[in-house]
Image 1 (cartoon, rainbow, N blue to C red):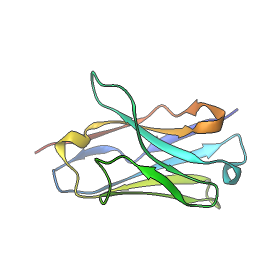
Image 2 (cartoon, one colour):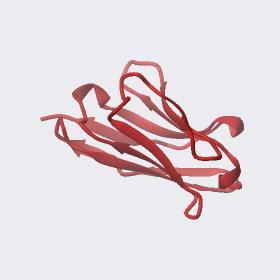
Image 3 (cartoon, helix red, strand yellow):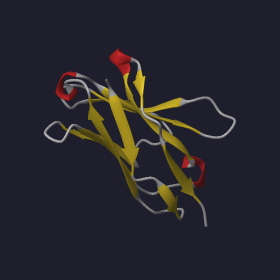
Length: 114
């Protein structure tokens, strides 16, 4: 079955950096676009970024443009989210998603605080 395992979350100070990883299995990873979503307490889940099969970024949320970078390593069946210049408002649970398979990981918590 499809399995998505996020890692790399944690507590970081404002202005700091964090790299999230999503290890995928149970499907042909290189044949699917991948996305990162996030959800803050009491808020709706929002799309952060999507990367295509060919490695092109379809979009970034306006709030993260210039600070976050989505990438993928097909040899490792892994999608990454590099987060720089983190802000308090980036605090959320971050989820890996396969759009066409409607599959989600369990999420990894990112907390930005002094």
